Length: 441
Ligand code: FES
Ligand SMILES: [Fe+2]
Image (cartoon, rainbow, N blue to C red; front, side):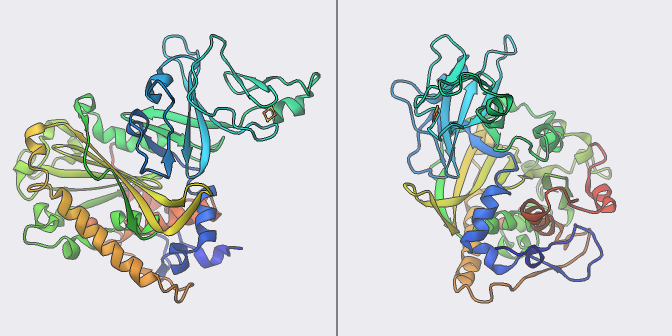
Protein backbone atom coordinates (compact mmCIF):
# COMPACT_ATOMS: atom_id res chain seq x y z
CA UNK A 1 0.00 0.00 0.00
CA UNK A 2 1.58 3.28 -1.11
CA UNK A 3 1.28 6.22 1.27
CA UNK A 4 0.67 9.48 -0.64
CA UNK A 5 2.35 11.63 2.01
CA UNK A 6 5.61 9.78 1.39
CA UNK A 7 5.48 10.88 -2.26
CA UNK A 8 4.10 14.38 -1.85
CA UNK A 9 5.52 17.03 -4.19
CA UNK A 10 4.19 20.60 -3.82
CA UNK A 11 2.96 22.56 -6.85
CA UNK A 12 5.77 24.27 -8.75
CA UNK A 13 6.36 27.71 -7.27
CA UNK A 14 4.57 27.14 -3.97
CA UNK A 15 6.52 28.61 -1.14
CA UNK A 16 7.66 25.45 0.61
CA UNK A 17 11.20 25.95 1.77
CA UNK A 18 12.17 22.32 1.37
CA UNK A 19 11.14 20.90 -1.99
CA UNK A 20 11.86 17.20 -2.01
CA UNK A 21 11.94 14.74 -4.89
CA UNK A 22 10.06 11.44 -5.05
CA UNK A 23 11.41 8.84 -2.59
CA UNK A 24 14.34 6.67 -3.66
CA UNK A 25 12.20 3.51 -3.67
CA UNK A 26 10.10 4.96 -6.50
CA UNK A 27 13.09 4.14 -8.72
CA UNK A 28 13.09 0.41 -7.95
CA UNK A 29 9.84 -0.65 -6.31
CA UNK A 30 7.61 -2.98 -8.36
CA UNK A 31 4.50 -1.76 -6.53
CA UNK A 32 5.28 1.81 -7.57
CA UNK A 33 5.73 0.76 -11.19
CA UNK A 34 2.46 -1.19 -11.11
CA UNK A 35 0.71 1.91 -9.76
CA UNK A 36 2.37 4.11 -12.40
CA UNK A 37 1.20 1.76 -15.14
CA UNK A 38 -2.39 2.24 -13.97
CA UNK A 39 -2.12 6.01 -13.43
CA UNK A 40 0.81 7.83 -15.07
CA UNK A 41 0.74 5.65 -18.18
CA UNK A 42 -3.00 5.12 -18.35
CA UNK A 43 -4.23 8.67 -17.93
CA UNK A 44 -1.89 10.32 -20.41
CA UNK A 45 -1.27 10.25 -24.15
CA UNK A 46 1.25 7.52 -24.96
CA UNK A 47 3.20 7.80 -28.16
CA UNK A 48 3.19 4.80 -30.52
CA UNK A 49 5.62 5.21 -33.44
CA UNK A 50 4.03 4.17 -36.72
CA UNK A 51 7.45 2.87 -37.68
CA UNK A 52 6.94 0.04 -35.20
CA UNK A 53 3.83 -0.93 -37.10
CA UNK A 54 5.27 -0.40 -40.57
CA UNK A 55 8.16 -2.67 -39.81
CA UNK A 56 8.05 -5.35 -37.15
CA UNK A 57 10.88 -4.95 -34.66
CA UNK A 58 11.09 -8.08 -32.50
CA UNK A 59 13.43 -6.33 -30.05
CA UNK A 60 10.83 -3.83 -28.89
CA UNK A 61 8.86 -5.37 -26.05
CA UNK A 62 7.04 -2.52 -24.33
CA UNK A 63 5.12 -1.67 -27.52
CA UNK A 64 4.43 -4.75 -29.58
CA UNK A 65 2.67 -5.03 -32.90
CA UNK A 66 2.62 -8.53 -34.29
CA UNK A 67 2.66 -8.53 -38.08
CA UNK A 68 -0.31 -10.06 -39.81
CA UNK A 69 0.42 -12.73 -42.40
CA UNK A 70 0.33 -11.24 -45.84
CA UNK A 71 0.18 -7.52 -45.21
CA UNK A 72 1.88 -4.82 -43.20
CA UNK A 73 -0.26 -3.42 -40.42
CA UNK A 74 -0.13 0.15 -41.53
CA UNK A 75 -2.05 -0.72 -44.70
CA UNK A 76 -4.68 -2.49 -42.67
CA UNK A 77 -5.34 0.70 -40.80
CA UNK A 78 -5.93 2.72 -43.96
CA UNK A 79 -9.04 0.83 -45.00
CA UNK A 80 -12.45 1.47 -43.48
CA UNK A 81 -13.46 -1.26 -41.09
CA UNK A 82 -9.96 -2.63 -40.75
CA UNK A 83 -8.33 -3.24 -37.42
CA UNK A 84 -5.03 -4.10 -35.84
CA UNK A 85 -3.79 -5.00 -32.39
CA UNK A 86 -1.02 -3.33 -30.43
CA UNK A 87 0.18 -4.42 -27.03
CA UNK A 88 1.51 -1.59 -24.94
CA UNK A 89 2.89 -2.02 -21.43
CA UNK A 90 1.44 -5.51 -21.55
CA UNK A 91 -2.12 -4.48 -22.38
CA UNK A 92 -3.65 -5.37 -25.71
CA UNK A 93 -5.54 -2.61 -27.51
CA UNK A 94 -7.37 -2.63 -30.82
CA UNK A 95 -7.04 0.16 -33.36
CA UNK A 96 -10.05 0.26 -35.66
CA UNK A 97 -10.71 2.44 -38.70
CA UNK A 98 -14.42 3.28 -38.74
CA UNK A 99 -16.55 4.50 -41.65
CA UNK A 100 -17.29 8.05 -40.51
CA UNK A 101 -16.90 10.92 -41.06
CA UNK A 102 -17.26 10.41 -44.78
CA UNK A 103 -13.98 10.91 -46.65
CA UNK A 104 -11.87 10.98 -43.50
CA UNK A 105 -12.88 7.96 -41.45
CA UNK A 106 -11.95 8.14 -37.84
CA UNK A 107 -9.47 5.88 -36.12
CA UNK A 108 -10.81 4.42 -32.88
CA UNK A 109 -9.19 2.56 -30.05
CA UNK A 110 -10.67 -0.11 -27.78
CA UNK A 111 -9.45 -2.32 -25.02
CA UNK A 112 -8.86 -5.60 -26.85
CA UNK A 113 -10.66 -7.75 -24.31
CA UNK A 114 -14.23 -8.89 -24.68
CA UNK A 115 -16.34 -7.49 -21.83
CA UNK A 116 -18.30 -10.77 -21.69
CA UNK A 117 -15.58 -13.27 -20.71
CA UNK A 118 -12.28 -11.60 -21.61
CA UNK A 119 -11.54 -13.27 -24.94
CA UNK A 120 -9.44 -11.07 -27.24
CA UNK A 121 -11.72 -9.31 -29.69
CA UNK A 122 -8.90 -9.37 -32.24
CA UNK A 123 -6.01 -11.76 -32.50
CA UNK A 124 -4.31 -10.58 -35.69
CA UNK A 125 -4.82 -7.73 -38.12
CA UNK A 126 -8.24 -7.93 -39.62
CA UNK A 127 -9.71 -6.77 -42.92
CA UNK A 128 -13.33 -5.78 -42.96
CA UNK A 129 -15.62 -8.27 -44.66
CA UNK A 130 -17.92 -5.48 -45.68
CA UNK A 131 -19.91 -5.15 -42.48
CA UNK A 132 -18.68 -2.59 -40.04
CA UNK A 133 -19.06 -4.44 -36.81
CA UNK A 134 -16.69 -5.89 -34.26
CA UNK A 135 -17.32 -9.49 -33.33
CA UNK A 136 -15.92 -11.66 -30.55
CA UNK A 137 -14.85 -15.09 -31.76
CA UNK A 138 -15.63 -16.92 -28.52
CA UNK A 139 -19.39 -16.55 -27.96
CA UNK A 140 -20.33 -14.13 -30.70
CA UNK A 141 -20.76 -10.76 -28.97
CA UNK A 142 -21.34 -8.20 -31.72
CA UNK A 143 -20.59 -4.50 -31.23
CA UNK A 144 -21.02 -1.71 -33.74
CA UNK A 145 -18.13 0.32 -35.11
CA UNK A 146 -18.28 2.54 -32.03
CA UNK A 147 -17.87 -0.49 -29.78
CA UNK A 148 -21.48 -0.33 -28.60
CA UNK A 149 -23.40 -3.55 -27.88
CA UNK A 150 -25.49 -4.93 -30.75
CA UNK A 151 -26.22 -8.56 -29.86
CA UNK A 152 -25.15 -11.61 -27.89
CA UNK A 153 -26.71 -15.09 -27.93
CA UNK A 154 -26.86 -15.30 -24.15
CA UNK A 155 -28.55 -11.90 -23.83
CA UNK A 156 -31.52 -11.99 -26.22
CA UNK A 157 -33.33 -9.27 -24.28
CA UNK A 158 -30.40 -7.30 -22.92
CA UNK A 159 -31.28 -4.67 -20.35
CA UNK A 160 -29.78 -1.18 -20.65
CA UNK A 161 -27.29 -2.05 -17.92
CA UNK A 162 -26.28 -5.29 -19.70
CA UNK A 163 -25.92 -3.42 -22.98
CA UNK A 164 -23.70 -0.87 -21.29
CA UNK A 165 -21.56 -3.52 -19.61
CA UNK A 166 -21.23 -5.53 -22.85
CA UNK A 167 -19.98 -2.53 -24.83
CA UNK A 168 -16.26 -2.29 -25.47
CA UNK A 169 -14.22 -0.04 -23.20
CA UNK A 170 -13.55 3.02 -25.28
CA UNK A 171 -9.97 4.22 -25.33
CA UNK A 172 -8.78 7.33 -27.11
CA UNK A 173 -6.45 7.61 -30.10
CA UNK A 174 -5.08 10.50 -32.14
CA UNK A 175 -2.70 10.66 -35.09
CA UNK A 176 -0.01 13.27 -35.44
CA UNK A 177 3.03 13.25 -37.72
CA UNK A 178 4.44 9.69 -37.73
CA UNK A 179 2.80 8.64 -34.47
CA UNK A 180 -0.35 7.39 -32.87
CA UNK A 181 -1.10 8.70 -29.41
CA UNK A 182 -3.21 6.45 -27.22
CA UNK A 183 -4.90 7.27 -23.90
CA UNK A 184 -6.09 4.02 -22.37
CA UNK A 185 -8.88 5.61 -20.40
CA UNK A 186 -12.28 6.92 -21.37
CA UNK A 187 -11.53 10.30 -19.83
CA UNK A 188 -7.95 11.51 -20.19
CA UNK A 189 -7.46 14.51 -17.90
CA UNK A 190 -6.12 16.59 -20.78
CA UNK A 191 -7.34 16.55 -24.35
CA UNK A 192 -4.65 15.69 -26.89
CA UNK A 193 -5.16 19.04 -28.57
CA UNK A 194 -4.70 20.94 -25.30
CA UNK A 195 -1.66 18.83 -24.49
CA UNK A 196 0.05 19.51 -27.80
CA UNK A 197 -1.07 23.09 -28.45
CA UNK A 198 2.18 24.70 -27.21
CA UNK A 199 4.22 22.24 -29.27
CA UNK A 200 2.23 22.88 -32.42
CA UNK A 201 2.43 26.63 -31.91
CA UNK A 202 6.23 26.43 -31.99
CA UNK A 203 6.17 24.27 -35.16
CA UNK A 204 3.68 26.34 -37.13
CA UNK A 205 6.29 27.51 -39.66
CA UNK A 206 8.27 24.27 -39.92
CA UNK A 207 7.50 22.15 -43.02
CA UNK A 208 6.98 18.90 -41.11
CA UNK A 209 5.89 17.08 -44.27
CA UNK A 210 9.50 17.43 -45.45
CA UNK A 211 10.78 15.54 -42.40
CA UNK A 212 11.45 11.97 -43.53
CA UNK A 213 12.00 8.90 -41.41
CA UNK A 214 15.61 7.68 -41.37
CA UNK A 215 16.59 4.31 -40.01
CA UNK A 216 19.33 4.49 -37.38
CA UNK A 217 21.15 1.61 -35.77
CA UNK A 218 20.02 2.05 -32.19
CA UNK A 219 16.26 2.46 -32.35
CA UNK A 220 15.79 0.17 -29.37
CA UNK A 221 18.06 -0.20 -26.36
CA UNK A 222 17.69 -1.41 -22.81
CA UNK A 223 19.43 1.18 -20.64
CA UNK A 224 20.09 1.25 -16.92
CA UNK A 225 17.75 3.01 -14.54
CA UNK A 226 14.05 3.53 -13.95
CA UNK A 227 12.18 5.29 -16.76
CA UNK A 228 11.78 8.35 -14.51
CA UNK A 229 15.56 8.74 -14.28
CA UNK A 230 15.68 9.17 -18.06
CA UNK A 231 12.87 11.71 -18.05
CA UNK A 232 14.34 13.60 -15.10
CA UNK A 233 17.71 13.78 -16.80
CA UNK A 234 15.96 15.37 -19.76
CA UNK A 235 14.18 17.91 -17.57
CA UNK A 236 17.37 18.73 -15.68
CA UNK A 237 19.39 21.42 -17.39
CA UNK A 238 21.75 22.03 -14.46
CA UNK A 239 23.80 19.04 -15.56
CA UNK A 240 24.55 20.44 -19.02
CA UNK A 241 27.38 22.61 -17.72
CA UNK A 242 29.09 19.64 -16.07
CA UNK A 243 28.09 16.43 -17.83
CA UNK A 244 28.15 17.95 -21.35
CA UNK A 245 31.03 20.23 -20.48
CA UNK A 246 33.13 22.45 -22.65
CA UNK A 247 35.24 22.39 -24.70
CA UNK A 248 33.50 20.75 -27.64
CA UNK A 249 30.46 19.81 -25.57
CA UNK A 250 26.82 20.80 -25.59
CA UNK A 251 27.70 23.40 -22.95
CA UNK A 252 29.57 25.48 -25.52
CA UNK A 253 27.70 24.44 -28.67
CA UNK A 254 24.80 26.42 -27.29
CA UNK A 255 24.77 29.72 -25.45
CA UNK A 256 23.99 28.27 -22.05
CA UNK A 257 23.21 31.64 -20.50
CA UNK A 258 20.37 32.09 -22.97
CA UNK A 259 18.73 28.73 -22.17
CA UNK A 260 15.11 28.97 -21.11
CA UNK A 261 12.61 26.54 -19.69
CA UNK A 262 8.91 26.94 -20.42
CA UNK A 263 6.40 24.97 -18.37
CA UNK A 264 2.91 24.08 -19.56
CA UNK A 265 0.28 21.76 -18.15
CA UNK A 266 1.44 18.64 -19.96
CA UNK A 267 4.62 19.61 -21.84
CA UNK A 268 7.80 21.56 -21.23
CA UNK A 269 10.14 23.31 -23.63
CA UNK A 270 13.79 24.04 -23.19
CA UNK A 271 15.51 26.11 -25.83
CA UNK A 272 18.65 28.19 -26.26
CA UNK A 273 20.51 30.17 -28.88
CA UNK A 274 23.35 28.50 -30.77
CA UNK A 275 26.88 29.59 -29.89
CA UNK A 276 27.56 29.68 -33.64
CA UNK A 277 24.54 31.11 -35.52
CA UNK A 278 25.32 28.73 -38.40
CA UNK A 279 24.15 25.89 -36.12
CA UNK A 280 20.79 27.52 -35.45
CA UNK A 281 17.40 27.62 -37.16
CA UNK A 282 16.78 30.10 -39.91
CA UNK A 283 14.49 32.51 -37.97
CA UNK A 284 11.84 32.32 -40.68
CA UNK A 285 11.02 28.78 -39.57
CA UNK A 286 10.21 29.68 -35.97
CA UNK A 287 7.60 32.00 -34.44
CA UNK A 288 8.76 35.53 -33.78
CA UNK A 289 8.82 34.99 -30.05
CA UNK A 290 12.06 33.02 -30.50
CA UNK A 291 13.85 36.07 -31.87
CA UNK A 292 16.28 37.93 -29.67
CA UNK A 293 14.98 41.54 -29.66
CA UNK A 294 18.52 42.84 -29.31
CA UNK A 295 19.77 40.89 -32.33
CA UNK A 296 16.80 39.47 -34.27
CA UNK A 297 18.78 38.16 -37.23
CA UNK A 298 22.11 37.27 -35.65
CA UNK A 299 20.94 35.02 -32.82
CA UNK A 300 19.54 31.69 -33.88
CA UNK A 301 17.85 28.95 -31.89
CA UNK A 302 20.04 25.84 -31.55
CA UNK A 303 17.23 23.42 -30.73
CA UNK A 304 13.70 23.10 -29.41
CA UNK A 305 13.68 20.37 -26.77
CA UNK A 306 10.07 19.43 -26.10
CA UNK A 307 9.10 16.99 -23.38
CA UNK A 308 5.59 15.53 -23.62
CA UNK A 309 4.43 13.98 -20.36
CA UNK A 310 5.07 11.30 -19.31
CA UNK A 311 7.84 9.83 -21.47
CA UNK A 312 8.25 11.40 -24.91
CA UNK A 313 10.81 13.92 -26.13
CA UNK A 314 10.59 15.74 -29.45
CA UNK A 315 13.93 17.34 -30.23
CA UNK A 316 13.83 19.72 -33.18
CA UNK A 317 17.13 20.76 -34.76
CA UNK A 318 17.98 22.55 -38.00
CA UNK A 319 18.71 19.08 -39.43
CA UNK A 320 15.37 17.53 -38.44
CA UNK A 321 13.74 15.74 -35.52
CA UNK A 322 15.07 13.28 -32.96
CA UNK A 323 12.46 11.42 -30.91
CA UNK A 324 13.03 9.54 -27.66
CA UNK A 325 10.50 7.42 -25.80
CA UNK A 326 11.29 6.08 -22.32
CA UNK A 327 9.30 2.92 -21.64
CA UNK A 328 9.50 0.71 -18.55
CA UNK A 329 11.48 -2.32 -19.72
CA UNK A 330 9.59 -5.57 -20.12
CA UNK A 331 11.85 -8.47 -19.18
CA UNK A 332 9.43 -11.40 -19.39
CA UNK A 333 7.19 -11.25 -22.43
CA UNK A 334 5.26 -14.37 -21.48
CA UNK A 335 4.24 -13.15 -18.04
CA UNK A 336 4.43 -9.45 -18.97
CA UNK A 337 6.85 -8.66 -16.17
CA UNK A 338 8.75 -5.38 -16.02
CA UNK A 339 12.05 -4.45 -14.44
CA UNK A 340 11.64 -1.08 -12.67
CA UNK A 341 15.40 -0.55 -12.78
CA UNK A 342 15.71 -0.65 -16.55
CA UNK A 343 14.27 1.40 -19.37
CA UNK A 344 13.46 0.48 -22.94
CA UNK A 345 14.80 3.49 -24.79
CA UNK A 346 13.30 4.06 -28.26
CA UNK A 347 14.94 6.50 -30.64
CA UNK A 348 13.83 7.74 -34.08
CA UNK A 349 15.23 10.26 -36.53
CA UNK A 350 13.39 12.31 -39.15
CA UNK A 351 15.66 14.17 -41.56
CA UNK A 352 14.76 17.58 -42.94
CA UNK A 353 18.13 18.87 -44.24
CA UNK A 354 20.43 16.18 -45.67
CA UNK A 355 23.57 18.33 -45.69
CA UNK A 356 23.14 19.28 -42.06
CA UNK A 357 22.28 15.72 -41.12
CA UNK A 358 25.76 14.70 -42.21
CA UNK A 359 27.07 16.99 -39.43
CA UNK A 360 24.73 15.61 -36.81
CA UNK A 361 27.61 14.43 -34.63
CA UNK A 362 30.08 17.25 -35.21
CA UNK A 363 27.68 20.18 -34.80
CA UNK A 364 24.68 18.81 -32.90
CA UNK A 365 26.66 16.23 -30.89
CA UNK A 366 24.04 13.54 -31.40
CA UNK A 367 25.95 10.50 -30.16
CA UNK A 368 28.15 12.33 -27.67
CA UNK A 369 25.26 13.85 -25.72
CA UNK A 370 23.38 10.56 -25.76
CA UNK A 371 26.42 8.69 -24.45
CA UNK A 372 27.08 11.23 -21.70
CA UNK A 373 23.46 11.14 -20.53
CA UNK A 374 23.20 7.35 -20.56
CA UNK A 375 26.48 7.13 -18.61
CA UNK A 376 25.38 9.68 -16.02
CA UNK A 377 22.07 7.92 -15.48
CA UNK A 378 23.87 4.60 -15.18
CA UNK A 379 25.91 5.92 -12.24
CA UNK A 380 22.74 7.05 -10.46
CA UNK A 381 21.09 3.70 -11.18
CA UNK A 382 24.10 1.86 -9.74
CA UNK A 383 23.92 3.99 -6.62
CA UNK A 384 20.26 3.13 -6.19
CA UNK A 385 20.75 -0.57 -6.73
CA UNK A 386 21.55 -1.23 -3.06
CA UNK A 387 17.93 -0.29 -2.29
CA UNK A 388 19.24 1.40 0.84
CA UNK A 389 17.20 4.14 2.55
CA UNK A 390 14.02 3.58 0.54
CA UNK A 391 12.25 6.68 1.90
CA UNK A 392 15.15 9.07 1.38
CA UNK A 393 14.47 12.01 -0.89
CA UNK A 394 16.56 14.45 -2.89
CA UNK A 395 16.08 18.22 -2.86
CA UNK A 396 15.27 20.84 -5.47
CA UNK A 397 16.41 24.41 -5.34
CA UNK A 398 13.42 26.72 -5.66
CA UNK A 399 14.82 29.41 -7.94
CA UNK A 400 12.06 30.20 -10.41
CA UNK A 401 14.16 31.72 -13.17
CA UNK A 402 17.74 32.01 -14.37
CA UNK A 403 20.27 29.43 -15.49
CA UNK A 404 20.24 27.60 -12.15
CA UNK A 405 16.52 26.96 -11.85
CA UNK A 406 15.32 23.41 -11.21
CA UNK A 407 11.72 23.99 -12.18
CA UNK A 408 11.90 21.28 -14.88
CA UNK A 409 12.57 18.33 -12.56
CA UNK A 410 10.26 19.85 -9.94
CA UNK A 411 7.46 20.04 -12.57
CA UNK A 412 8.01 16.42 -13.59
CA UNK A 413 8.04 15.15 -10.00
CA UNK A 414 4.82 17.06 -9.32
CA UNK A 415 3.20 15.69 -12.50
CA UNK A 416 4.02 12.13 -11.49
CA UNK A 417 2.79 12.68 -7.93
CA UNK A 418 -0.44 14.18 -9.29
CA UNK A 419 -1.01 11.28 -11.69
CA UNK A 420 -0.44 8.75 -8.93
CA UNK A 421 -2.43 10.35 -6.13
CA UNK A 422 -4.15 13.66 -7.00
CA UNK A 423 -5.01 13.63 -10.70
CA UNK A 424 -6.95 16.89 -10.69
CA UNK A 425 -4.59 18.97 -8.58
CA UNK A 426 -2.79 21.95 -10.09
CA UNK A 427 0.71 21.40 -11.45
CA UNK A 428 2.01 24.86 -10.66
CA UNK A 429 0.73 27.92 -8.87
CA UNK A 430 -0.96 30.54 -11.11
CA UNK A 431 1.89 33.03 -10.79
CA UNK A 432 4.36 30.47 -12.13
CA UNK A 433 2.01 29.39 -14.88
CA UNK A 434 1.92 32.99 -16.06
CA UNK A 435 5.65 33.42 -15.70
CA UNK A 436 6.54 30.36 -17.73
CA UNK A 437 3.89 30.20 -20.39
CA UNK A 438 4.90 31.93 -23.58
CA UNK A 439 2.93 35.08 -24.28
CA UNK A 440 1.91 33.68 -27.65
CA UNK A 441 -0.22 30.91 -26.16
S1 FES B 1 -15.88 -13.80 -24.47
FE1 FES B 1 -16.56 -12.62 -26.09
S2 FES B 1 -18.60 -13.21 -26.38
FE2 FES B 1 -17.96 -14.32 -24.66
FE1 LIG C 1 21.96 15.69 -20.84
